[in-house]
Amino acid sequence: MAFMLSLLMAVVLISYSLGGSLGCDLSPNHVLVGRKNLRLLGQMRRLSPRFCLQDRKDFTFPQEMVKGGQLQEAQAISVLHELLQQTFNLFHTEHSSAAWDTTLLEQLHTGLHQQLDDLDACLGQVMGEEDSALGRTGPTLAVKRYFQGIHVYLQEKEYSDCAWEIVRLEIMRSLSSSTSLQERLRMMDGDLNSP
Image (tube, rainbow, N blue to C red):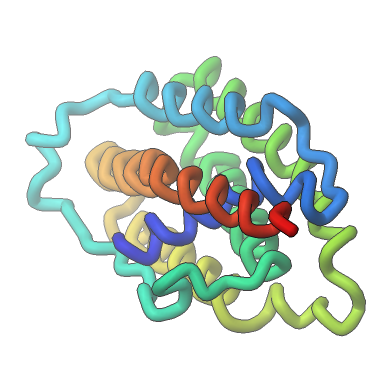
């Protein structure tokens, strides 16, 4: 969970500070869309988590990958992009459509797609050919493995309502952890812009 928090902070940092420092043009409402996505996930609740205690699972994310904010800017953008892409993919399946209110789900798809579009331009700007391996190694690969674990969990639980509720809470928890990341990113932006 601590890794997920660090990862999300990196995402927020990128949204706030790297846009200016790397010439990356993130939409001004990038972070607002992220907050709206979090609210949508909250509105998607169908069950009380108390009914799903037996289905709880620790979807451990490897904390050592981002401990102490060691991600470089290109890595952080790549990780954020992968996190949003995997979240989009998770909630854009036939099983997901059967589990959630379609209106809320479509709004979530739209919001995640907006954030991904913003990051696509940044990703292209900061990742040259020599950095293309970032998507297949290190922190980005850890995000992929994390989501593979979530997919396996859902399959094992046969996409039950409780399994989806546990996954929804996990994604919400990771996205809501971005507040401290935002602060760290603002501090980094100040360091990057100082003489």
